[in-house]
Image 1 (cartoon, rainbow, N blue to C red):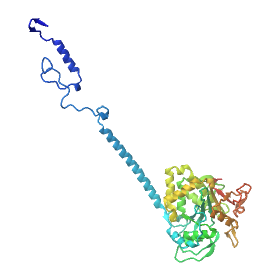
Image 2 (tube, one colour; image 1 turned 90 degrees about the horizontal axis):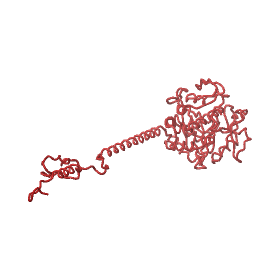
Image 3 (cartoon, rainbow, N blue to C red; image 1 turned 180 degrees about the vertical axis):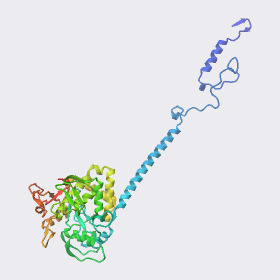
Image 4 (spheres, one colour; image 1 turned 180 degrees about the horizontal axis):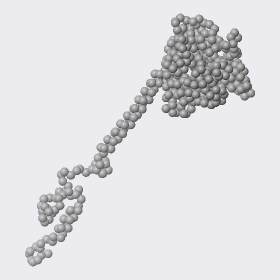
Length: 444
C-alpha cells in the first residue's frame, strides 16, 4: 500500500511490537543471545537476556531433574554403614571378651589326669562309649577365699559330697548316685597329695580317698567299687556353691520345724522360704539340727536341693536372660576344677545343653543301697545284690527307676535302696530304687 505512486508506505509499528512481545515471552533456554542491533526500534532498549555465559549447567538427570546434588545422600549412607559396623564389631568384641573371661575362669586338674594315665591298664573300660559318667565332688577344704570361715585349714581336705552322674547315650535321662562319705570301701594305693610318697591299699571310709590322694585317688576308688569308667570329673568348693545359688536368686525349700545350728551357721524359721547361698550351704551340710542327725538324711536333703537347683537353672528366667545367665556361668566357672576334657566353656556348654534337653522328671537322684557297717554302726556298707544290680545297669547304660519311699517308711525302711511303694507298675526287668527326681523339688 502506498500514499502516492512510486512512494512506499512507512512500516506499521503494531506488528513489530507484537513480534517483540512474543520474543520476550519465549523460554530463555530456547533462544540464544539476542544479536546486537536487532529487535526493532530503539536498539539496546530490549530486556537483557536471562541467559549469560555464567549461567549454571542444567541439573543432572540422576537427581530426577530436581537440581539437588546426589553427594550429600551418598555421604549419609556411608556414615550410617560405618556406624552399624562399629556397633557390630563392638558387640562381637564384648562377646569375645566375656567368652575368654569365662573360659579362663576354669581350673584344669592336670595332676589327676597324669596320675590316672599311670593306672590306665587297671581302670575299667567303657561299655557304652556314647554314655558319659561324671564324678561330681564337693570339697570341704577350708583354704581359699570364702572357705576359711567354715573351720581351720589343717592342710587337708575331704570330699563332703560325691555324686556319680550318669548321662545316657541317647541323652534321654540322667541318674545321679550319691556315695556316702562314711561308706567302707577298698582304697587303692595312691600318690599322696601332701608330703610325698604313696599310701598302701586298705579298707577305710570313702572320703579318706580324697584326703589322702585327691581327685585321682577318689576316681580310682569309685571305679574299683562300681566297675564304672569315670569319663570326667568336677570339683566345687563351698564358695562356688554359694555363688551358684546367689546367681539364680536363691532356691526355695520347705521346713517342718525351725532350725538353729551354729555348726552349720544356719538359723531359719519353719515354713516355705527361699534360701540364699550362705543359707543353702548350711542347709545341705547340717547334720545335728535337721532330721535324725544321720548322714543318710543329709544326702537326701542334698539330692532334694540339687533337684530344685536344676529346676531353677533350667527355667527360662535364667537360661534365656543374659543378665541372669552370665552370673551363673561366672560363678560356676570360677569355682570349678575339671579334667582336661571339660576345661573349656564349649565343653561345659555341651554338657549344659545335654542336661537342659533332659526333662526334669528324668533327672533322678538316689543313694547307693547301704546299711550300717557290721563292725561299726557309725559307718556304712553296701547292700548286695542291690548295689551290684544298680552298678551294672549304669555300666551298661540300662534304665533305672527311682521312687519316693512311703512317708511312714522312714529312713530305715529305704536304707536298702528298694522302694516301699511297689504297687506302681514298672517296665519288666527294670530295677527300682528309692530316690526322687528333679521335678519334685524340695517342697514335694
